[in-house]
Length: 116
Image (cartoon, rainbow, N blue to C red):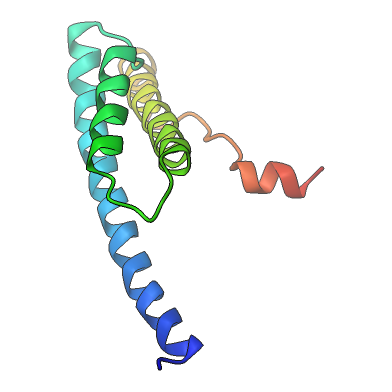
């Protein structure tokens, strides 16, 4: 029987992979944001988000319940929209002002809750 620390090491390895994959996803989101900006499209695409959620829930083999996976992906999609909007806004700032400043990021939810 594996020890708690052995299972935690396995989780740490998976977390490392998840972080790498989420950052890779964010890079793709950034590229899509740039394309949407060139095409004059907004960051929010409800049809695409529903398609993503349908796919993810279809691929789910458990043990995560569907509602939990849905909430996790809704959060990922929300943050992806934020990244797209920031990309679009940042490009507008650079175009109009010549400055390289990015708009400020929202305070992460965990920090907002901690400050209450």
